[in-house]
Amino acid sequence: MSVQEFEALFKTSIQRLTFIHEAPLFYEGQFLSGVYFIKKGKVFFTKKKTIQRSLCENHIIGIGPIMNSEEANQNAIVEKNSEILFVSKIEALKKMKQLSISL
Image 1 (cartoon, helix red, strand yellow):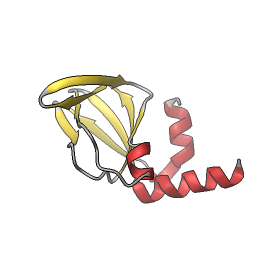
Image 2 (image 1 turned 90 degrees about the vertical axis):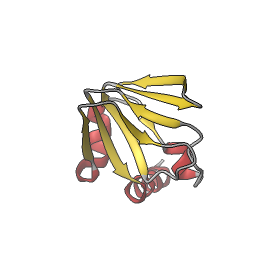
Image 3 (image 1 turned 30 degrees about the horizontal axis):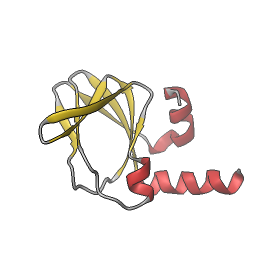
Image 4 (image 1 turned 120 degrees about the horizontal axis):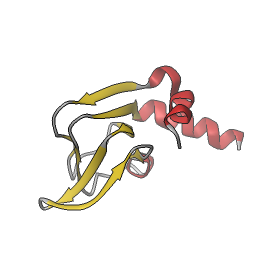
């Protein structure tokens, strides 16, 4: 999904998060409060201080955990100078429900 498609889908529900320093996005064991879209930069997923994988621009993070009410199974660290778009769990689930009804 492109950033334009994500922004069009969620319109006014988006919060823009800018990271000027490396920082945690969420921690292993945490219930996510929404979904994240990487607009610029990279997110590293770690377990026991070891990088397991990374995602870059135009990737969505958190759909599975919020749909299944599951805890995050890894830590997510945002690289410095990244921009992340955030949509709350309530808004994301509402939109997914609308989309599944219209499909």
